[in-house]
Length: 95
Picture 1: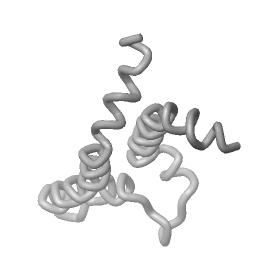
Picture 2: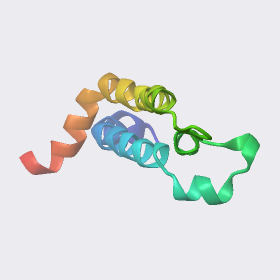
Picture 3: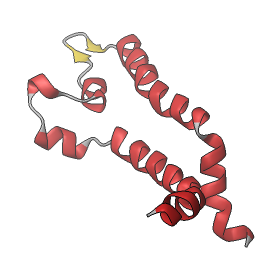
């Protein structure tokens, strides 16, 4: 276990972080599963964006604010772990 923690885990950490970032990005924007599996009390951000149609039509200012709020967490997370993502995605190409 000690060899795994001190040798294998540091070598695999860029790949694990980049895989986590990609999984988070794909699940953050999931619309179909959220549409079929959630209730009114448990709506996700893509469903809130899609539900911005009022009786007057589409309220584009509400949609733009919701889209901006939906983009902030993945972008901030990507900036925070950018070094790991680049290392994890290019690790196999350089060796």
